Every structure is written in C-alpha cells, then in structure tokens.
Image 1: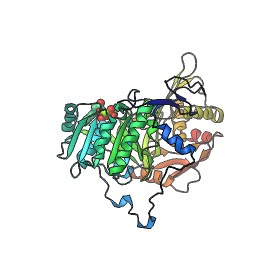
Image 2 (image 1 turned 120 degrees about the vertical axis):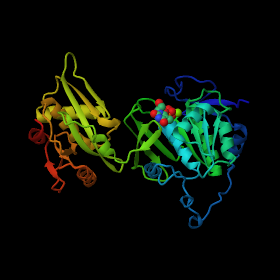
Image 3 (image 1 turned 60 degrees about the vertical axis):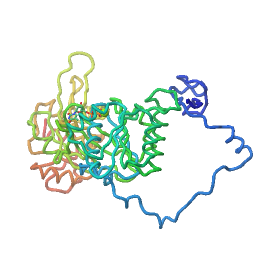
Image 4 (image 1 turned 45 degrees about the horizontal axis):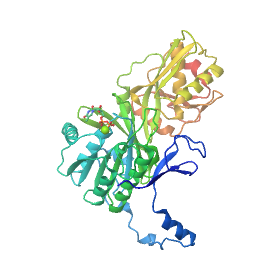
Length: 449
Ligand code: TYD
Ligand code: MG
C-alpha cells in the first residue's frame, strides 16, 4: 500500500502535495523531496497541549561501556584496504562505496565477500545483476565461499527486513540507485528514494549490529549524484577513483567515524580481479623514458609517499585561444600556474597549447605538485629535459616563490629508496639530498631553460 506522502522543499521547508521543479516559495530548483506523512494529527494535538512526548533516556556510565572496537573487525584480503577502513570492517557499521560505473565496485565487494565468508555469513544483494551473472564474476574471482549467499532485490523494505533477521554479519547492497521503498512513489535513484531507503537499511544494520556496505554510483565529474545525501547518514564513505580502463585505482576514506581519513589503498585490475599494488612508485616509473616535459614528482597519496611522472606537452596554438588540458591535475590550478609562469619567469606561453598528464591514472591533489608541473611545462616549452635522477616537489606562490611542502622527509625517503640522487625542493629543507629552490625563475633557468 502506498503511504500518504508530501513534497517538502529542502531549502525552505515549504510543503506541497505535488512535485514541482521549482519551489514557488523560495525559487530553489529541484529542491522538493517526497516524504512520508506520519499521522500528523496525533503529534500536533500533543504539541498543542504543551506535552513532551519523549521518555527519559536509558543512559549508561561511559566507564562501563564496552567499546565497539573490542569486537573483532571483519578483515578483507587487502591489508591496505583494512587500514583505510581503520582496521577492517566494524560490525554494525554502514559504509558507502562510491565510484564511477565500471570502475570495479562490484568486483572489489565480491572479493571482500569471498574473504569474509570464510568465517562469517555474508549476503550479497544486487539490484543490477542476476544470480547467474554474479556467479560468473564469483567464479572468475575464485570467490565461491560456502557462507556466501546471494539475493536479487530492489526493495529497500525487503533488504532491511532481511538485515533485521540478524542472520548475516555482512550485507552488501549493490547499488543504492536501484532501490525503492514501497511507501514512496518516486523513481529509484531520486533523492527521496535514496535517503529513505538508506535510512531504512541503516536502522536495520544498527539494530542487529550487522555490517553493511552500500554501493553508490557517481557521475563522471565526481559528484555523488544521489548518494551525496547518504554521506551524512553513513559511518564510512569510501571513494573509488581512477581510470576506468587500466591504470591504478585508489580507494580512500573521505569520511570515517572509526579511523583516519589519510590512508589510501592502491589497486590494479587484472583478469582475476583487483590486487593491491605493493610498490606503486616502482610500477609507475617502470615505463618511463626521460624526454623533455617529463618530471618526477615526489607526492603523497594520503599518508603514503609516491613518485609519479608528470608529463607536459606544449605545442603552438594554431588559431584562437590557447588550449589548456589536464588529466589527473586540477585545471584551475594549471591555469593559475601558467599565469605565474608568464608573469614571474617571462616564459611566453600565450601562443602555446598546454597539456598535462599524470601517468598511471593517478589524481594529484597535493599543493607540492606545483613546482613539478611548472618545471614540466618549462621543460616542454624549451625542449630541455631535467636529469634522470632528480625528483621535484614544492608549492609555488603567486609571486613565483617556492614554498615549503609538508612531510618532506617522507618524500625524500621514497626518492632515495627508488635510487634517485637529488631532489629539487623548498629551500627550507636542510638535507644534502635536496637542492634548495627559492624562486621559480632561478630554478627554471638553472635546470630546464
Ligand atoms: P565492475 O566491478 O562490475 O564495476 P562497477 O561495479 O564499479 O560498475 O567491473 C569493472 C570492470 O572490471 C568491468 O568492465 C570488467 C572488469 N573486470 C576485470 O577486468 N577483471 C575481473 O576479474 C572482473 C571481475 C572485472
Ligand atoms: Mg556493479
């Protein structure tokens, strides 16, 4: 039976009987969300009488509480992923695994299931694939554990009821966008379905201490379309990023109530599923040929130091505006660095198309990548290459000054480990390995121009 619902504007709280694209009250677009009307009349009368309907909380002395961590966590076969999770999957926790379609979410979860199902009861619920299709993947991944069950369902109510039965220690829901709650008429994937279905499942998980992992698809530009609203509700949000075709993929926690958000697990996809990359720097540099425009950056992925190759290409602009393209690097940051280069180093770039590529599908989100990107551009524009045994790191300020980078010692250690002889880095670092760079112009003239 369909429950009575109304549409509530999430911006101003106005209530409507029908959905409209723009809220007539506050003019916000797409802000109406369908909500179930709960017998308002009884609530209202109690309020009118000034009565408080709640009851006194059952509180406990915090000293007597057994920490949930004391219970064993469910371990995956991936040590780095366990670290990202804060030491494994906590019982009763609800995690959201978000990523682009095709990146490998179902694959990763099937591999997690296989490992956990060696000891625990695990249920994989899919709203996207049939038992046969999932079985094919399980065979391919060697994930045919005895305690692993499967169900095809798109009903949030049924899934919540199943979780509530307490039969399973871990339940996978693939994916939130396919779920619908019986009481709500809007289509699967809409904000109201995602929020209400999510809430239902979270409540069921908490009441029975069942660990749940929910899959959420995100759109290409990285925004969590529907799942964004779930981010506030769940305990852990894992982002699965990287190239869909080949290259490395990273899993990092952007939110974790039970662990740090600085850790990252790096994966590669092969014929028989995902595997953790033990030494990403070595793998990333394996195919390197030292050409102009190629600079090795000592960066950090979460807490891990990593060496990646930054490639730049500068070609003459044929007509119109010069084109600037970046893959794995923020385009706005690139435009800013080009402006700094033009103004502070007199390098002429306004007649050049500039392309930046971070090798291996990595996404760089580190201010200390600035100097490497600038040097790569200068090197490409001048056709001069930097020596083979140099790594580079440092932030570039708008004045063309080179600023300090955090965790410099870790970057240096990683470079030394992989046989590099020098680093060009901020002048504040006192280490013989680092050639101090104070000013962008001086540094470029000395090394790549
Ligand atoms: P999938 O996990 O279904 O992606 P998602 O659930 O995020 O949409 O699969 C991602 C891709 O990985 C798919 O195109 C096929 C490929 N793949 C492999 O290369 N090896 C494997 O062992 C598996 C299972 C998939
Ligand atoms: Mg999938």
